[in-house]
Length: 262
Image (cartoon, rainbow, N blue to C red; front, side, top):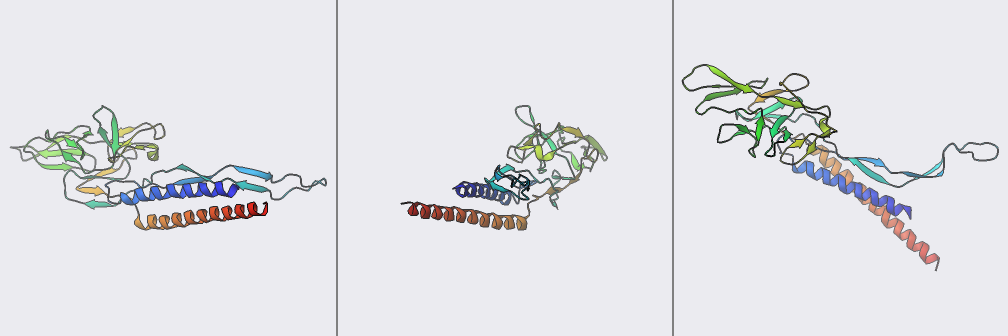
């Protein structure tokens, strides 16, 4: 019976929906996390009677047909790139991005990754790095015993050097933008890599060419909405239950038919 296979695809789709929701809820407090959503499409149809076909020798046209669907499929789990809430921390190396753009990170193998996790640290050489020690690009080294580290909205990094009373410019942070942020591939650890779907990375100054500005002493929180996710979870659970009931009903009907044929 077709209903068995059709309902099974519905259960599989809702199982995936719950997995996506679980991932979102698990990362509610992950800095810079972008939530995902599952997107679905209906599967191919069997056209028992095609719409608009001739219904009789008199030339009557069928106003409706008979189309039997074969279920549902998952077509993607895109990320929602909306801005997360900005929270003040007071940490001088916390750099929230207000608007679009990503920090470029140099990986140990020489490739680049991208992140919006802006809770940066300083390594034993004074370089600005991620929480896992990867270098933020362009590489900026904070001199020993310097004070007054400031990073303005345009990404200029300045400190006061020992023996000086004026601020000195150390370097310039940049942001990377993509035509399609949702096309980035997540690799874990809040890092993404470019793909053909994301488009070519474009490096530029904060505040220019669709790149946001920087806010020192703040972090961008996850954009996961607990209310939305719980509502989606309830809907997915109900849909899963209803598809399971279809399978139960179809199975009982098949048993009845089998008994009648004995």
